[in-house]
Length: 145
Image 1 (cartoon, helix red, strand yellow):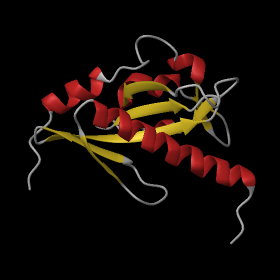
Image 2 (cartoon, one colour):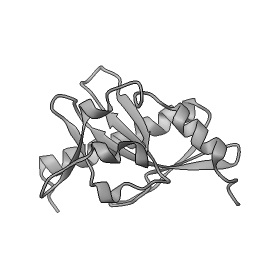
Image 3 (cartoon, one colour):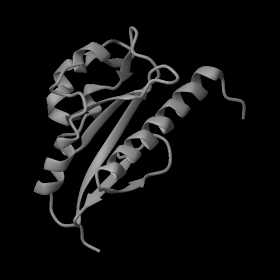
């Protein structure tokens, strides 16, 4: 099967975003499991002190006139979302963290797609808010083994 460049870029951007988020969570003391496959609702499971969070990662390459593709109907309340802008080479990624209910109203839907614009998340309410994941995990139930 031959993939076109646009399809390849989208897949590699998403994978890079997942790995960057996993690395950030590891730095903060979480154990992280990545899920495998396309069209999955959960990309990462993050666990700390036997409590966990389900995380969906959305990644784009650059911020100029950019946005993350997402439909309002796909946003789930119990999942945490990490929106990643990979930025230019040599520049660290930018992270925006939100609960499902926090950003649903910011999504603009068109006939063929839904988009969450970079500018609508670019504030202290979302930027580098890793504390939202910590708080979510503290409130979650213990993982059963």
